[in-house]
Length: 583
Image (cartoon, rainbow, N blue to C red):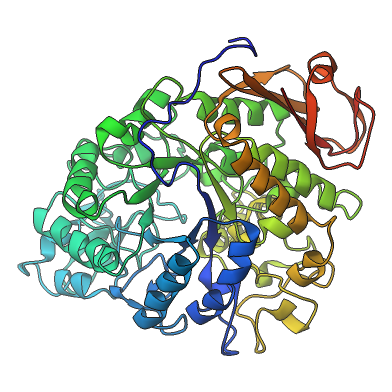
């Protein structure tokens, strides 16, 4: 497709969520109102005016439900209650009102692949083999080797290192959990289970006025229930990667269409954004997000979060150097896959499960930190689809300092990988693995996104008057909201400006067709957005040295709309410079 082509992403029906900017709040780390060291709903309510001033249309609240917190609230013990440390259902109702009064929307996390092992449903299920809820989860008998030793029903490796099966002494069977042993998987093949999910996790909150959901692990509900063993790819281990046994399973589209028809559509144009893993073919993704499919509004393609990660599940945190062409291929693929279809896409480069984008894709060196944060902002606001920001991204928050030890890290996944590496070192299998895993965690760990939000230069960055549940970043006095609000040249001020431009040029940026130009260039990322006769050129320097603007000819015929440098020559991009030209 030439830059002059007029292919566009169809606007379809006028869904409110297509042109929205969504801001993800991780409640534990956003704002503490009562000094207990944990962020909470009243703290978030106090910052709704701030989010409104930023230009946010939708607040996405990550799990706020009652939970034992083995996995930071993704292990839910009651869908209809709020974690006491976060507040009450009444607080959430007030949050809904505060958002709606400002013309903003609120979406919640929907975590229904699994519950906590402390959920009443699982307590019943594990109470006896003949309990009526036994089949609400996956229970299977043990296997035994030739020596009579008990083995799990299959050889599957879970996401948090270790087997996907845990033995239950009381009923003498194993239960399935793709994540932690405290997160047993729900059996969606059971109709009664699905109806309970719709009532407790979805209708309960939509009845209160919530506007939609981010749908966790959305393509993992339908398992291969014959439970065959996974192919052996790691001969040294009993457990093997097995995502094909639960991703995009045989009944997944049936389940999601039923959920849409019965629990979502009756409430109107409910926004749903699914977390879609292990689905590399765009044709398969369209089965989830096509408007005619009536399943999900859009999905997150997690590829951009995987840049720099190891190629296999067991090597996830072994950092892999990457080339800019990898990012271009990923962005181009998921920007353009909806062109000419009734589907929709998303634009994001941060969330609660990844390191900070400045540290990963730009530079957190003091000389280039702000510049690269603004460059990444320019990339994001020009992208097709619904835009998602993560808390702190708007001020250019960065990864935890590299000299922090593993003792400062809290995440169950990262710690699971590190402890596994320690065991492999101790038994002589791989003596240097802990060091390699730690190097990867310094860049890729989920913890980096979970450091407390940096509001001001008071103790604990203004996040709490107490002791924060997680250590505050050492540089909070340099990087914080209060400092940036009064500085027209700050990252925060820049985000406010470019979010306004995104709305002003919505047809081009949000709905325009996308094309990478000069793909093989390893230093600069240039792409063209086009819609009818309008065009935009986005030019981004991903290095710490000046680079030639290879599209200078095209740029010379266009008007410079915005740049993160005061002024620089047409033909050269300064270190981490970003520009958008329009015609």
